Image (cartoon, rainbow, N blue to C red):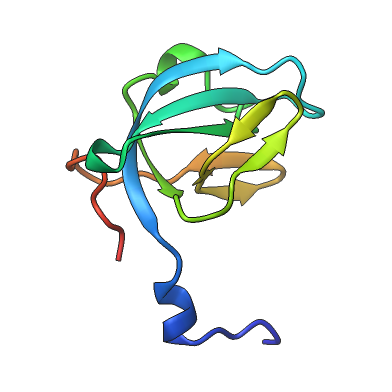
Length: 111
């Protein structure tokens, strides 16, 4: 494997649990996507663009807990500012969101 990282590299990635509190269509995105607003508890509210429209309906996403990387720099995507990266497993170009097995406190660290 050419992309081996150290444990120290991994500890720099801040993975947290959040709850999706708002889902909107993102018609200006190059590929079909939603605009998500996510509550990370004491860490605040963050936004993310997610290309998950083939597997999820908007109403299925609201109040769903997810896992996201919250320490990336903000990224402008069309007319929207994405502040975190929602994590999912990819199979045949579809993304399946990763989430805690049980409900946990928003902002909980993933280790």
